[in-house]
Image (cartoon, rainbow, N blue to C red; front, side, top):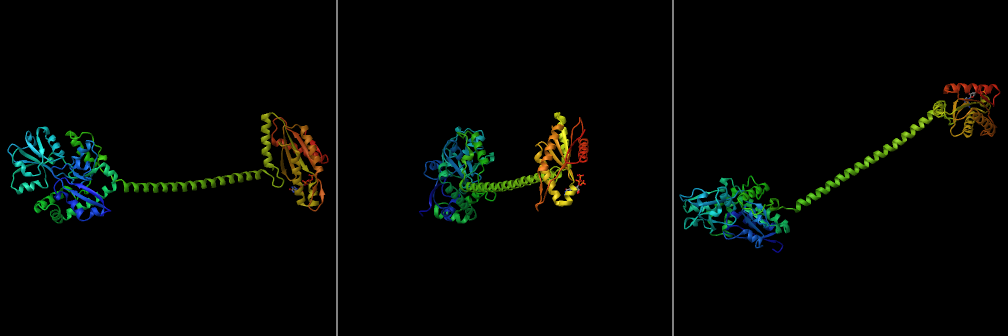
Length: 509
Ligand SMILES: Nc1nc2c(ncn2[C@@H]2O[C@H](COP(=O)(O)OP(=O)(O)OP(=O)(O)O)[C@@H](O)[C@H]2O)c(=O)[nH]1
C-alpha cells in the first residue's frame, strides 16, 4: 500500500512470545490502521540492536535498560515505551559444587549477550570486578554451559528455565532482583532524529503496539499459533505457552499502563549504572524519554488563546461599566454642585430685584467689617427708601410698583462701584455697603444716585410713565462699630431725610 509510511523494527532475539504484541499489531492491522507499513527484523545473540538503529538499518529497536549506557556515550537514542515493567534478565550457571555466588565465577568463563548492564551492576553490587571474569559472546544455546570451559550465561526467566528443565539439566539461577536491582526490561526505542522528524509516526506506532500487546495478552493461544505459522515453525508450542505466562507477568498489565515510563525510575536505573561505573557521561533522563509534542501543544495553545480572549473580554466590559459609572457620577456631582450653588444664591438673593436679601447683605457686612479691620480702611453705609411708594401702588397698581422696584435696583447697580454691595432690607428700603469710602465719597455717590433716579422714568406697558424719588441716609463707620449699630444709625439718618422733605440726603452725626 503506497499510502503507508514504511517503518522497520529490529527485534532483540529470535521470534518468540517475547514480541507477541508486535505480531498481534501486524496481524490485526493496528499498524496499518495507524498509517504504518511495519517490517520486523529477527534478532539474536550476534545482533547489536542499537548499532543497527543508529546506523539507519532499522528505525526502531528493542533494548534492555542498557540503552541508558548507549545514551551516556553521546549516542542519540530515545526510549519510546518500556514494554516489560520488570526485567526477565537472570544469570544461569552449572550446578557445580564450587559455584554458590557470583564471586565464585572469578577466573571462569560465561556467555554474555549484548547490553548486559544489569548483570554488570549485579556483579558490582556483589563486590565482583567484571574484569576478573572471562566473558565471551553468547551462542544462543543454553546447553553450551554444560560442556567445555563455559560455566554460565545470561538468560531470560521467560524461556531458558523451561528448556533446561525439559532436558533434565541441573542448574543454578542468580537473579539481580534478589539484590534489589529492579530495571525495565524490553524497551522500544528510536533515534532523536527520527523522533523529531516523524513525531506523529512514533506516537501512532506506540499506540498501535500497545493495542497489539493488549490483544496478545488476552488471546495468548491465538498468538502462539500465529508465531508458529508465520514466524518460527520450529519453536515448541509448550515453550511458547510457558513463555506467554511469564511474559504476561512482566508487563504487570492490571496495574501498569502498557509501555509506561517513569522518569524517576529511569533516573534510579541511571544511578545504579553510575555506581557500577557503566555511564560515560551523565544522562538527561527527560531528553532520553520520547516526548509527543503535536496534539498536546495545539490544545494548550487553543486553551491559552481562549482564556486570554475571555479575560480580555471580561476586563473590557468591566472597564466600560466602570467608565460609564464614573461619568454618571461626575455628571451627577456637577449637577449637585450647580444646584447647591443655585440654592445658596436663592437663599441670599432677593427674587424680585436680583440684589442681595437682608440675610445676604448682613453676611457681606460682616465680611466687609472684618476686611476693614484687617486692612485698616474705612467703611460707609448708605440706606434709601422710596418716597410715597404707597401712592404709586395705589395709582398704577401693585405690578407697576414691582416694576419700579426692579428698575430702581438696576439703576442702583449701575451707579455703584464693583466693590460696593446692594441689598434689599424689605419693602422699598435698600442699603449699600461702600468699602474703603469716607463720608464725602458716600455723599457724592448718593447725589449721583438721586440724579440717576430722576433721569430714569418708569414706563408702563400701556404707555403711562412716572418717576420715583428716594430719601437717603449715609454714615461712616465709627471705630470698632459693629454691623447692627451701623444699620440702626443709617436708618435714623434716612428717617431724618424723610422728615427733611424726602428726595434728599441726610448724614448722621
Ligand atoms: N408693589 C410693591 N409694593 C410694595 C412692596 N413692598 C412694600 N410695598 C408697599 O410700599 C408701601 C410702603 O408704604 P409706607 O411705608 O407707608 O411708605 P410710603 O408710602 O413709601 O411713604 P414714605 O416712605 O413715608 O415716603 C406699602 O404700600 C407697601 O405695600 C413690593 O414689593 N411691591
